[in-house]
Image (tube, rainbow, N blue to C red; front, side, top):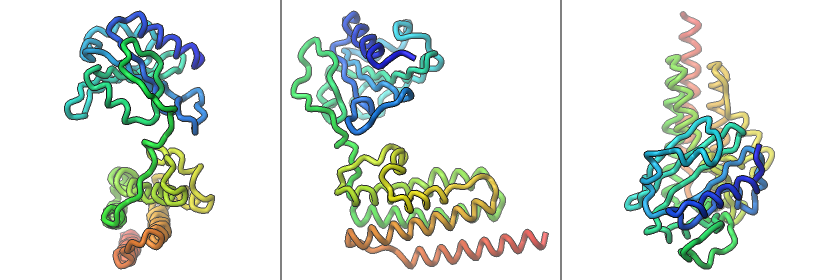
Amino acid sequence: MRSEREILNLIVAFARENTTVRAVVQNGSRVNPRVTPDEFADYDVVFVVENPEDFKGDRSWMRGFGETLIVQQNDSDEPGVNWVIFLMLFSDGVRIDLKFFPTSRSQLLYKDSLKKLLLDKDGLFDNFTAPDDSSYFVKKPSEDQFYRTVDNFWWCLTNVAGGIARGELCYVKTMHETVVRPEMNRLLAWHIGLRRDWKVDPGHFGRWFHKHLPPDVWSAVERSYAGSDYGDIWRSVFESGKLVRRIGLELAGKLGYRYPIDEDENVTGYVSDMKKRSGEEKQQD
């Protein structure tokens, strides 16, 4: 695999030789002083250009970076900002996420605190501070945000229970992992933020939870996962509920918010009854 120095030199050399590229900004984990990147870390790079669309049709320019195994191209979903990004995985395992960003909106790049200027042909940028991860710090929730998160967790947990009772494995796993777990993860991120005075980045999708949570809480997170066995999934449902109750009550107490203990107890009782009844029905069958 090519070294970081090789890749960055390649990126800057490409930009110098290409007249349409006016500046190069690196962002992401490789410029985060709190992170030690490993060989799997991608290179997040922004090429500031007049017209990002110019790079969409003829992709022969990619050959300059190496042999690609797979490429994904996405367009901007930001109103009024027309950018294009290519996610490129190369045959030696190097991954470059290369965004082409319009010069007309270049000042928007200041919003990201994780940024490092690699090249600036026209003096588009000045006063780039040292990169830090403050843009990604978890933010203290409002009481409404806290309540809605807890409320949605308990509401959707009933859907998981219903799916188990019906034997709908795909629905159960999807509901638990893509709807219920994100609510629990949000609470865990707030728990970490509170412990660190809201000056911490827990990582995308809880990437660094294991580094920031107390060992006993992290063990509880591990217990909240399950395989495809319904008995194990039932266990994970109740483990998830216990974890949310523990973290939710602690957060509510320290933030001065109300934890909806009535919803918690009602749903826990409902799910327990559903588990019992589904077991009885299977025995009758």
